[in-house]
Length: 274
Ligand code: AMP
View 1 (cartoon, rainbow, N blue to C red):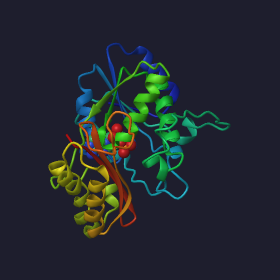
View 2 (cartoon, protein in one colour):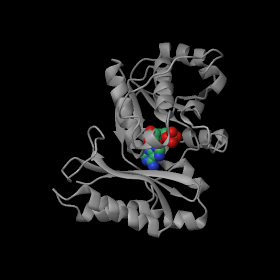
View 3 (tube, rainbow, N blue to C red):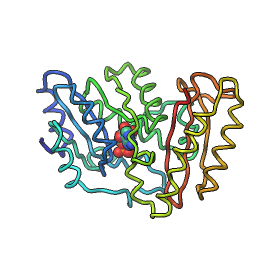
């Protein structure tokens, strides 16, 4: 496993590779969710993992500075898998002086997480575009944990005629159902205990919802369950799994998406109902 810190070096190495290249973009602080993507990428002859806390996808009052970083621990974890290259560029290298170019997917980036985090998806699409240009992966392995992100990035790859395919990977959860996230480390023990309600509330609706039900009734029930456990709801919506448009009446494509603050920590999760 080789650690590559320079864009130029990464591009040169890529040119020498033969066979399929599988790519796992991450912001580090790796957990079993990230490692499941690496495992899926083992179907490719070459695996590249990037670790880059991308400043342009964080808002001004967000957690860029406090975001957990531990390169040594991440490398130890990745060593156990068949990872060939870890790409670890600096912000200065990715956004050189005079940087002015942005990629923006319209419409589906100003709803849900995009509504609460203006500019977030512009940062995500821009950095992923750059990483894809550098690494030229055949397949990019991404977690359904970030359901809107996958939808946005698939749209970008299609619209810009890019050759990379996204492989959608399932959400990895803690044994009590909480979706794994680097941000779970911010939760105190009380918040951590209560955070289980995000998944529980969605599963209760999954068990009880019927085709034709008013989505709003189920949204209200989830909101109440989460608030009763001290959660501060940023959004809870039921959307089409295909294009994220709002669902009025539950149908076979309905997908629950939510973002909730437990204390100061914003957690996201989602679940397809059927
Ligand atoms: P991040 O480091 O949070 O930017 O995430 C990097 C990649 O890991 C993204 O494709 C995420 O969707 C994915 N990921 C994060 N948490 C999980 C999880 N619990 N299960 C599956 N994939 C995940």
